[in-house]
Length: 211
Image (cartoon, rainbow, N blue to C red):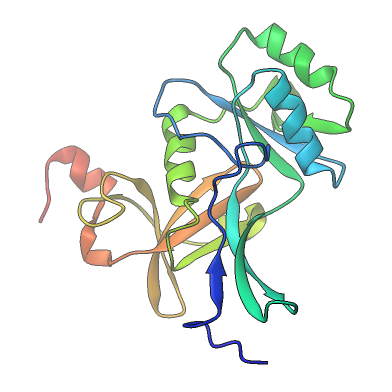
């Protein structure tokens, strides 16, 4: 079977508006977000539930290579990065949103501030926006990490001043002799390869020192 990627590779575009896992355009607004842990493998059905309720949600997606034996092609298909996590925007009254979540016909829970605090953890708008931007499946040299793995990564808080990631903030970490911009949210993290020379420590940037 000839699987030369230059001749036999097909990338399926994210154009299926009927698929609830496909997220609408990312909005840079002031709304905070909730992270929901799912205790079911029915991620698509959970997303459809929130879609039917008119809520804005986000499912991190990535391209996965699948061999099509009939056509002898390799297909790049968008698939969820993880199937037990979904993010919901808090764009309405909290009590109404809590009711929608509580009425969901699926077993799920909202990440809370701590084990001893019943309040939902609210992901700041800027943090979630930058996370969504970095989850763009078209961006290469990207890695996803579990929350516990991300916390073990040591690095410096930086602002990217040049290049594709200009304006984004995160932690500059080193992995396999390469530098990455790391962004964490409850439940997971994403990091993208970046040049260290394009990053300014946030403390220096805030003090006006760019040398």
